[in-house]
Length: 129
Image (cartoon, rainbow, N blue to C red):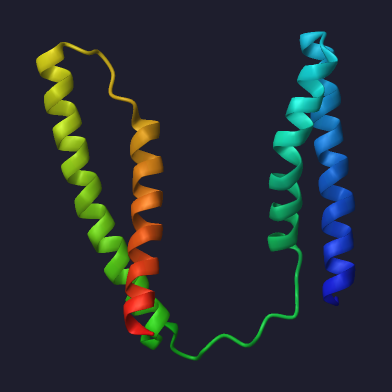
């Protein structure tokens, strides 16, 4: 499948899925604005997910992917991010116990870990180039 067909299918089907989600949200909430907001939020996600999931003309994978420089970058970034998240979680649990907070917001740690990994990966990649 060529790139134009793949992109077209992703845009059409992803937009259709976003419209369905928007209509369901509008009907459940009774507001047209809610449908528009849900459509606007879901459309890029569904189009992007379909673009990734549709088969494309990807280049052949290396025989030993663990020997590639990208794999090394990923290992260095993920190990550093893991330690950062462990430290942040330890500090957050300590603060939560001192302040007598019942829950620690785990979503923040997921966002922290993804952002930390992305920044570390980008930094390692830029230093290597």
